Length: 116
Image (cartoon, rainbow, N blue to C red; front, side, top):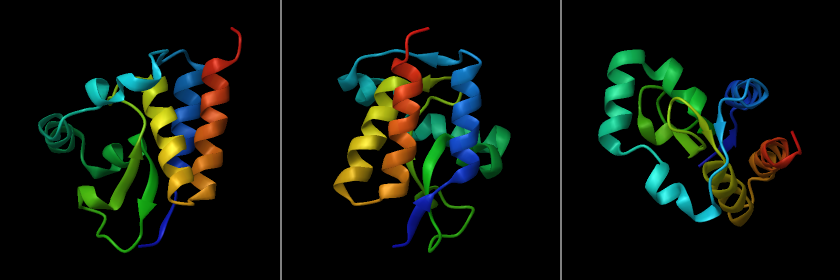
């Protein structure tokens, strides 16, 4: 599996955060806040995979572009960036040694935790 940073998604997340489209939720809230498979399918049906992929910091180039398995490390709910999702992506990327994704998630984490 060749998982790398999804640059388009990373730039999208930075723009969302800069515009104030985020939730400063607790670290452990991601299991409750991440979209369900049904919500993912509905989003894809309405917006397509081009919009869907922007919500994932990682991309597996060994998977087809029109498969959900291609996109890794979600960070939001298709509307807002969730701090808990960013933290989850940062930790998991570190565990799997995807340093480019870990660094990007850490930067987003810093943006979210910076004093406003």
